[in-house]
Figure 1 (cartoon, rainbow over the protein chains, first blue to last red):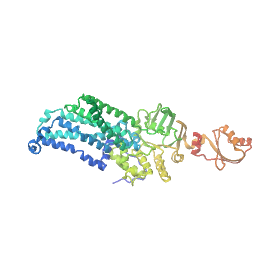
Figure 2: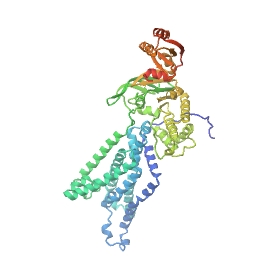
Figure 3: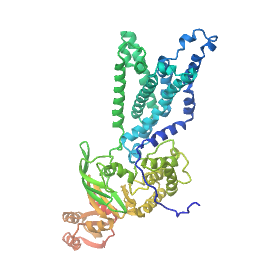
Figure 4: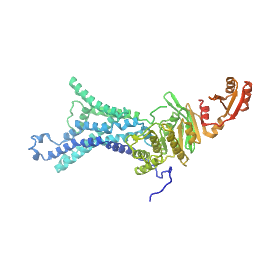
Length: 290
Length: 303
């Protein structure tokens, strides 16, 4: 039977706990809020289309005899090997979808808190700046992971299931690690990229503009300089090219640009560190000096 | 002691915001008064651990200001002055989210969120998006999020700002009720003296980063000065000058009432002597009831 209590303030009889995963409610709430946007739900579902197409590709590669009548030369073009997984994880469309999803769910992560002065509400709780940032980072990582890590592993499992043997696994025992580590690399990079952009303005529309401008402008600039100077190092200015170059190294395939892959790796890691420093400095409990 | 600060200094670059603040806070409701820029909000933020003092030491609820901010924030409820909220949430989600971040389990936080939202008068609109709330409703919501984890100490920064008179009275009554509950102490920063007088027994007056006065409001009124109201006939200027040279503060109201604030130990008969020396006829002489406004004006040195 429900307790009948007097009107007024009552003490809470529970015990506050110091949780090791203090950031988790921030991540969970961020994900939940993203799904409350109708446009986001539609986009989210559509963003799995490339994974589905690649899944069909894996199936077809194991049933080549059945599909030869449909497309000639399919056995040469459709080879499921490390390059196949790398091509999925460095697909232009995947990066485009990540940015599209982040425009709806990531742009406001910090910007909205700035706009509505909510940072002080978080930091007035037993949370550190790191907890706050981890919580926000978790939202970006979740969505980037869903578009990279999850399909990558599923495609690998599908390949094993459709082939009906462990031959593929024995041929490329390191491939699953490549998928995991390159996906983790993408998750870290995009987290740094989105959170940095989100902390640069308190208007989410500007944040979206910043994200797309940096991504597109860097790619265009890299391409133009490559044409002008005929130097592969021009690709270092392009975010996409750097991600491709690092991806090739992770999957042990020939890099698309003729310069050492670790330059791209160092550049992207430096970008992430710089983003961390900038975002950390921007998060303060005191916003207004009186 | 709930709060015990000793010689706290804090600067924003070259601007000194707190210049050796020391005070203790006992149970009950205490008002933190001061003009704009006096250092009230800075002091609250130092106590919450948002800002680390340049010098000095202090404890809040027994926890060290410099090293144990996390424990302080777990036990303290903070209602910021700014209009702050998280968009896209209803009040239950927002309040329970804040409870969870304080260390409550999810289910307990949701249950408690309903309780406090009913308590602050948002029960009927608790499933509405916060974005659609009025300023008064958001003010109540800020109080709810400060109370959700049942803090032992409540810091309220300008709790009645942006409120109409009716809303202000309701919020003040809620705060007064919380302040009367055993085990919860309230520190209210405000420049609205009537709010402080309505809720608090004690007051800390801060001016230019220093504690100008602190203690029970009634005691401070008695200790710091006496107020006399006079009606006179004659030239005010010389009379005023001589009284001011003896340490009194003299004000003339629009209806030609003269208010004389005398320092501690001042013999009120001296006013008559000064009047006689300046050929002033005293036609009315009343020892007046002092208000917090008078105390504030006297201590801070403003009208």
